[in-house]
Image (cartoon, rainbow, N blue to C red):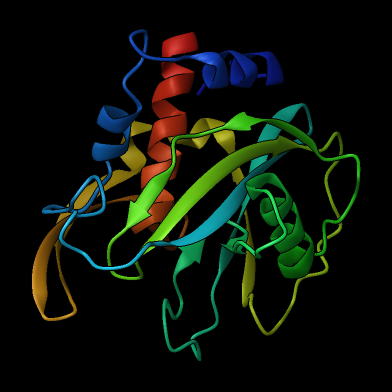
Length: 211
């Protein structure tokens, strides 16, 4: 595949706004079905708040991003593929949460991380989390110093793989006793689905709109 993606393309992608671009439609392309787009009004209380960071960096003039695999010992989300991120603390902005969690999970704490912009917030029904995803850039390939408590494996992905339709697959899965139609990105031996795939899908279609 010809590599056309640059930081300028990413900046363009993050500037897109309705009516030029429908982020929810982009998210739905990789969302499990059925799946609510917003938190139901009938659900009591308030959602838990979180943030994630999709960290970009160059490898041989090609943009990459990092995913993590959760340990199989986790009670929730065991073995799943995710972006660095977690729950917001009371004193934090969402941007600060995304950077702190990236530091804690994969050891990238550098002030050289440039926040390029945000993707659309995403509601996750099973955990009742409202997640605010950000995209950041560091101008070199990091040295990973990941937390073995939170991370079992670091997965480095070329950004242009998101544009390879042959890596997108669809099938049925039983989740918490119910059957869902799920979509995923098959990145090497890893099946990237759920909230992570939904966030990647929004970025994918933003990039396509700018190319």
